[in-house]
Length: 487
Ligand SMILES: [Zn+2]
Image (cartoon, rainbow, N blue to C red; front, top):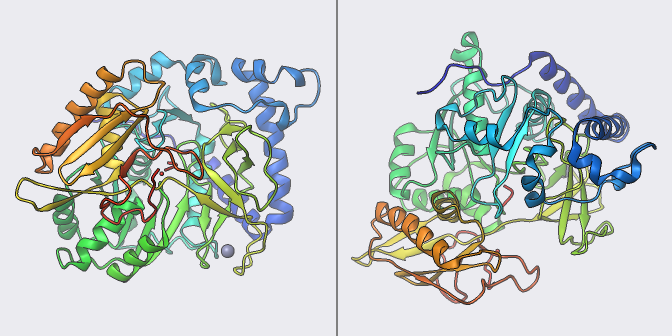
């Protein structure tokens, strides 16, 4: 049963975050950088005082003034393994978080009376659980309002959340996923008095068949669509084909790579502006897109260090193998030099838009949208995020690759770290079979591939959902492996 507990929202912290974020937007070089230095010092101090895990990892700096480089880089798996030693609030334990997450009705409820908890959805390979304090939530809210919604221009509360705005969020539902939890929080923290003026927000499941989504969106008639690029592109195709008639003002994309082809298709089919953003479950608003269509890093609230495969610094302009993230906003479950896995390039040039926030390019997740034929030969589109979520959540298997080998055949491969691939296959197949049946695809065969997953030649990265080279993807991602989100 849904609860009535109010999700974490602290008005004073929100006011402070808004004021500081606005001030840094006006003066990124001086005020923004000064705040970044101050916040980093506070974060390191709180972390060393409160987190046994990080204290052990930064032993060299004990006794002296800590420096960021004293913290050894850390990955998600390691943090999850040391979950009980990680948080600075020592009441936070794996057992209590898992008990909280096991109840879907507690979505966006306050955990321990004051925190938000969310998990990464089926886009990130390794499952992650993240606890956010009221300050970090206030910062994400402020970055969202000041930079994302206005494209970095002057803050206007009416820019995108205007009266009469109807927002459709199409994402992974049915779990405490970061996007889903954030939307649920937003819906519940709007004060009763403000509700008539607030936008209507409705959540749709990316796991539902595309045909059903089209019918539901057509009935709802949103003005703002928030979703993954692959989903927006598939919906744009439906709009172009005349199956749907939405009158969108804007589409916001995130969570996967937005290719130029996808952007074009969404813009021309819907006749609306397309705004990209780069965020992750680990930090919700890493970068925002300016009117020039470029990504600016929120470097007053988050530090990114591009690194090579040995986690050594990559000079400006160079393409990284991965990126170390330091979240300057969240003190309860600190992330310092956290290996995000994303390939990022610091462009090192000024942007024509005039903003001094650094320009970055992200070589993000770009799984394929798959097209399979039903028993009558009719094509059915399957979104990569939906397929990945079904396997990750339904079968509790993270390290897989799903290949489309024919119009009616899929192959599942597993990484070497999967202890019992046979059991992983049986569970994944069972979860997939239910999903495929809902899409009218009970005819599709699912085989166990014994070969190792195919990796991207350039980066060595794994694409979790892929059409075999030369076979038909549904033109979703526009970047084909043979061989690859954030979120
Ligand atoms: Zn710009």
